Structures are given as structure tokens and as C-alpha cells.
Amino acid sequence: MKPTWAVVTTVDEPAPLVATFAAHHIAQGAERVHVFLDHPDAEAEAMLARLPRCSVTVCDDAYWAATDKRKRPLIHTARQLYNARKVYAETDADWLLHADGDEFVRDGAAVTQALAEAPPEAMYLRLLVAERAYPKGEIGADIFSGVFRHALPDFGQNGPDVYGDMTGFFHYGLTGHKAGKALSRVGAGLRMGLHAPTHKPVHRVIQTTRLLHFDGLTRLHFTLKLLRRAAEPEHGGSNRHGAARSTQFLSLRESISDVALREELVSVLKNLDPDQMARLRKLACLDEARFDPRPVLAAAGLAPDLSVAGFDARLRQRHAAFLRDHAPDLA
Image (cartoon, rainbow, N blue to C red; front, top):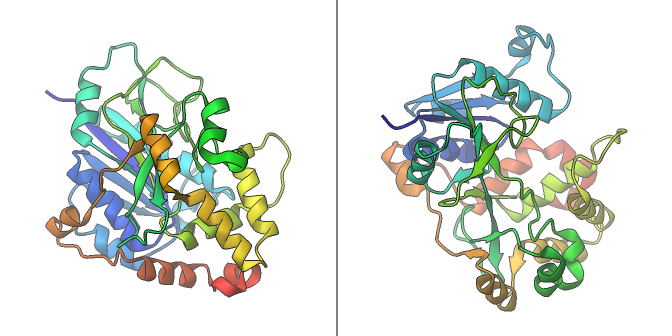
């Protein structure tokens, strides 16, 4: 019998993305997808209700009051961890993937095969990241358009070769994380973390597929993501965002009133010119295969609006007050 795997996510994103995340992973073979909605969302609930093997929990005040937390944790990562650990303790699946709503397993069959071949000492299997970027000058047909870049080997040399003076804005050639995400062995007493179980147990890396990370589904989504991080209150301790990410959002905050400069910064971070793409191909760090979830959604009887304009309209509605205060030209 093949091993089973489930997915858990705590998400606060527009309904079309949430529904696509769940439908895609169910189609890829997940035994169950556990979606924790960080805020009530009637549209998302209605879409998710049509999907088999999808469990939905609304994390409202009543939900948190009934937990040992007693009230909603202030930091979103704390809420993610609580929900992931809850599912790990309760799931019937053999393995559990903790992913964000903008992360998609490329090939579920390859994941299942890797799990079947995992040695008994491996407490988790790591999915490496392929991060979405746009070829320069192309306008994506929908929020999932684009190509995917991998973390650069020998970043000290290859980083400047690909990204030049902007190398400091990238973490091993990525705007987001390179840590990937883990499929954790259920029943092994692991403590779920954001990217992998804590205390670094023995693991293996899946070589046959990747986790597609859409670090910003649109330019507005990426800009808003960085601005919200930059607006977080300062706290003591280590920088949980990392040097490159901090450089990104602090630079964006400083340029927010200069629309041309802000747009150029986003373009540098998210667009690849022909020379950069050629260099990434040479390094075997570019995946140009299209990601298209529409057939899966259609098979599930769903037709969410995946257009850039539709997604951005939802973002402007959800974050209207924040945008008015921090970037009124985007509101």
C-alpha cells in the first residue's frame, strides 16, 4: 500500500487562491487538505465546501477561545504553528505537509513515490523550492503565469553574475525562502515547525519534484506583502525575516512615495531579462513548464476568477485601510 500524505495550511488570502490551493493538492493525491481560514470568508467556505477530502476550520474568536491559547495569537506564524501541530496530532495520514497558501506541489505522484522509498530513519522529506518569476516584458494571462527559478549554487559567484548590483536583495537568488517545506512522518513524535520539524531530525531531500512558491501572486500582492512586513512592530531578538527580505521591504518602504522607483524595484525583484534567463538555464536553475490549475478547478466544478485584475480588486477590498494609510495610490 502506498503511503498517504495530507496538507495543512493557515491562510488569509482571496478565495480564488485558497480554492485553487485545496483543489490542486487534492488532485495531486493528498489524502486530505486541512484549510484553516485565518478570518471568516464566506466565499472561500462556499468554494471549499464543494471539494472532497477538504476540511475547513474558521479561526474566529470562538475557535481560539476553545483552544488552550484562550485567545488569538498576535503573530500569524504562531497561529500557523498551532494549527499545524493540531493536525499532526490528529491526522490519519502517514505524512503531513505544512505549506502556505501560495505554495503548490508540482508533482504529487513524485511525492508519493519519494515517500514510499523513504528510509525508516528519515523523519521528514524536504521539498526544495522553485520560485515564480516573470520573463521581462510579458504580461501574465492569470495569477499563475510565469517561469520558476531555483536557488543558485555557489551564490557568492553566481549571484552577482545573474543579479549584479541587486544581489543583496536576493536570498540565494530568490526573493523568498530557499528552505523549502517538509513532509513530516506522522506518529514519530515530531514538533512541527514552519519549514521543517524542530530540532533538525534526520531527513532526505526529494530530488524528483519541487514546491512551486508564488511569492506574490501579482505585483500588488508582492508589494502589499512587503509593506505589511515592514509595518510590523519592531521586536527584540534575531531577524526572523533574514537580511535579503529585510532589505527588500525596507527599501520598498523608503521608496513608497516615489511610484516610479517603487515599480522599478518590484520589476528588478520579480522580472527576468533574457540574459538572466539564459544564465539561469545554463546553471539548470530555470523551470519553464507552465503551471495551469484551471483543468483541476473545472473538474471540481469551480471557476474562480484567476485574473490579475480580479485578484487585485479583492486585495484592495481586504486591505483597504492599510493601503490608505501606507500606499494611498494603490488603494
